[in-house]
Amino acid sequence: MIDEYLDRLFNRLAGTGRAGRRALAEAEDHLQSAVDDGLDRGLSRDDAEREAVRRFGDANHIARRIWLADGGVASVLSGLWLLVGLVMIVVGAGRLLKAGDLAVLMMKYPETRPACPSHLTVGWDCSTTPPAMVYLLWTGLAVIAVGSAVLLVRRFVMRVHGFAGADPWFPFYTFWLLSIGIILLAFAPPMLGAYELWSLGGPDGLPGWHTSITTSAAALLAVIWVVVSGLMRRRRTVS
Amino acid sequence: MPRLLGMDLRGHLDLLLLSTLRQLGSAHGYALITALRERSEGTFDLPEGTVYPALHRLERDGLVSSEWDQQAPRRRRVYRLTPKGVKALAARQQQWQAFARGVQGVLGEAFA
Picture 1 (cartoon, one colour):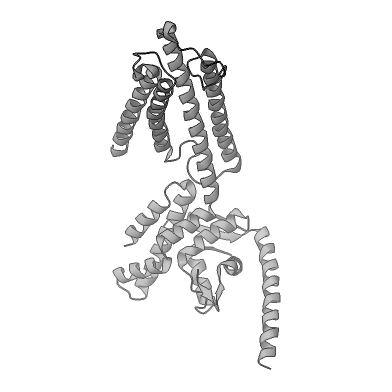
Picture 2 (tube, rainbow over the protein chains, first blue to last red; picture 1 turned 120 degrees about the vertical axis):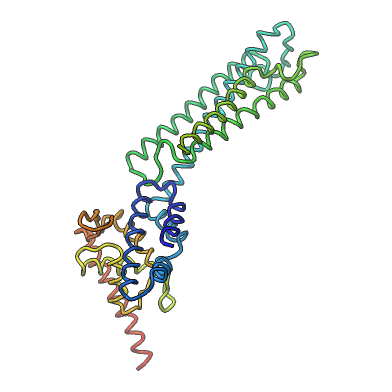
């Protein structure tokens, strides 16, 4: 019964790092002391354990209060910070890949490149023009730079202030955030890029999938990476 | 969080823990909560696990310090008041006594 309670508490304290580990050790000592007292008073072991667990309190409630007392809000903020940084890097990478798609397209079909409407001179609205490719390239690099800066600042602040909780570099959920980001990167840009170029009146006879060669290749590599990483992580966990 | 006379004890738990720790000198969580229950003659019978978040918060605020007890048979964390905690306890005791005098003044009038 004590072990089951400690298992529940351990699960609720997942991701709290050193603070949670200490709380778990204190809870185990407390419960064992309570059981010893109960046995001294003549209770059976089962009754002593049942009383100790009942008196200690609900595991969810206790874990939540420990999480709050040990900087839980700071952990949430640092998690949001991490999410923003990762999303920005994924979005920036998507822009770079789209710029790559345009470069491949212009190299492959220079003679069939449609003319850009006169009122659209620069910008991503006329996506088959070189200025649009340059725009995507520089904005992609800028967004990646800002996302990287967000992650570096987060790392610095967590180190300076000693935020309790998960490892500041790789919280347990980082793998899943990266995986979801890469899958979004894999499927969204090719569909958006192909639709955009097709709706702008691509060359006659130009199939939609030719418009996203670079992104499609990156998407395939990303999916392979997610699957292989997941299998390798699972093998490490099992062993 | 238990209530007494309709009052949420959360705000007073720190005062109770600091005071009990001052009387005991140093103690681990189980001894602390047991002493609190005995000295209050069962009035403050809290969910025992709630003492640890409170102690962690007091330690974060610098009012208590803790270390692992190397002599104990199990892994056990022992707490004691810091000088800052002693001052904070004195201040909170004064506030509580002023509150209690006020309440007694009103209750005394009511039963006069």
